[in-house]
Amino acid sequence: MNLCRVILVLAALGATQQAWAEGGSAAQKKQLCEGCHGIPDYRTAFPDVYTVPKLGGQGAAYIAKALHDYKSGARKHPTMIGIAASLSDQDINELAAYYAGSEAAK
Picture 1 (tube, rainbow, N blue to C red):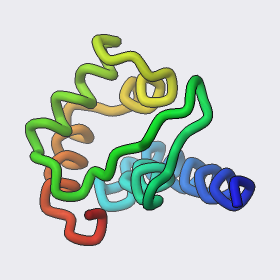
Picture 2: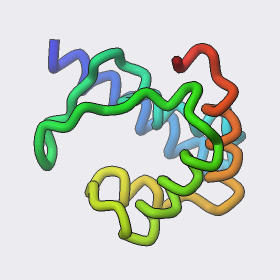
Picture 3: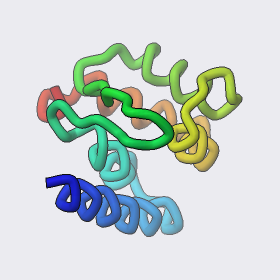
């Protein structure tokens, strides 16, 4: 079961890296987020066991602040710091708006 999750995350990472490199839309970029945040009851194993929260339905301001905090290092999670570091302010705003209104991700 864990191997399936790893494969899913790696596939999402590959697709999202291409979307970012090509200036893809927030809808394309969200694939990286869904690799972890779209799996019900998903828990990471690095750096510690951590329950991954669902993003759908969270407030846009909360999501944007969290991403900015990861980007600045104010929030500490190595994976999220790395992901947020690659996001522009526009990316963050688009992803926050998408997940705030996303019924599918709830």
